[in-house]
Length: 373
Image (cartoon, rainbow, N blue to C red):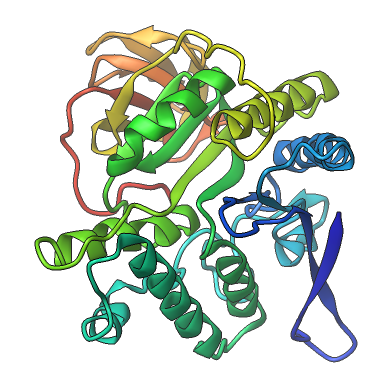
């Protein structure tokens, strides 16, 4: 294992933060590169424990010569957010200096890449892949971040931009394990969902606001569409966000199981020697992110759930009750779509307009910005 420390610019006098990446194996002439990072939302702790179990397993695999490619692991992707503790509350989702989500506003490179690539692409798809990766990396390295957080985003995107596989490990408030990926990647995501036992696999081509995983993968299908019929462009990067259940589920048993499932999937993808075990039966099929219903509270009140994460619900069925302690009004919160309730909030007092649960429906009906804040 090779450890690389990436210094971030000082946020203020006397402060220094460092990002750490762990590098296992070697890409070599024909090997793949996989990149995995944990807890970009720094208050989503389960991913960091999974990363610790992954580190141990990867060290053992490397020591016995079982790695076929390079695997890069960032076990703590957000030292900035991890330090944002306010009177005992961890505030790792948003950058306190700007209010921006740490998993939004990465560099969308397609528009800048097109004029650079136009005179250089040819008929060799492998050569085109290498050319696109070099050009994308040059654009990222030319980026001059204005803030410490932008510098962190630049470092993370540079580490992932030339990878064949990118996994961004997160969690939700209270949830079953679920995945987000690009619609063109749904077939490749299905074995990952099976290995992990995911109960929702949500796909889209553009979710809005340029989240990390989408930014490194979307450039490939966008360039392929732009140059269709002229130059062959491979879908050279598979990327997904893995939501590791709920934020309080920090247990060695779960983490070891998740790490083992990720190792088995990497074996399936050819980065680790040995025959992959038969895939478990899938627990879900891919459904559009545009079909996810965010259930919201019509008024403030005590939130009493009638359905748990993983439950199947029918349109019109109550999933929770909202009790106003001032008026004693009780309002049932009804599912608007038929599907799986895959996530809900941990809070039990809702403010007006608050998103309290998410249901994965099969029919797309939303557009615009599809992710929560």
